[in-house]
Length: 123
Image 1 (spheres, helix red, strand yellow):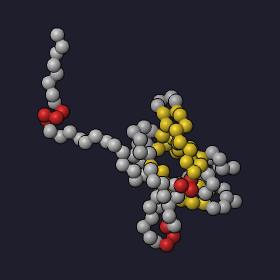
Image 2 (cartoon, helix red, strand yellow):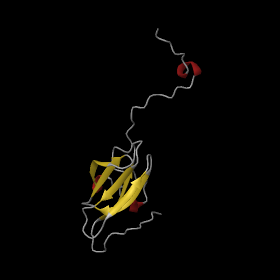
Image 3 (cartoon, one colour):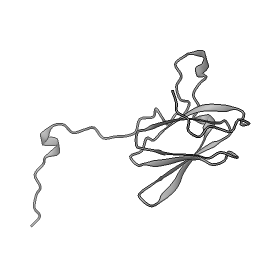
Image 4 (tube, one colour):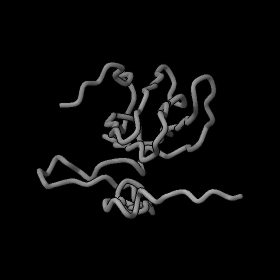
């Protein structure tokens, strides 16, 4: 069951359940600031999945950065992060196609001769 600390205002119609995955190697801050009388902000660690409830017209801002700085790296409409109707009991999948995309990651080198090569001195 999802824990919702900052519930939406009761007058907010059209709530949807959303999912965002931090597919980067950096810590991110996910923020929704375009909903009146409500502010949502969470830290999302690399590989972490964030499940949250939001109005359909809201936008999730993704801020990526280092220790003392952050850059707005994405602004995603929440309706593109929504789950299919989970009310019918079917297995639902996130609509966002970036969650399931594979990245080009080089294969892991497991043989010693692939990883430990002697250095040649230039004289």
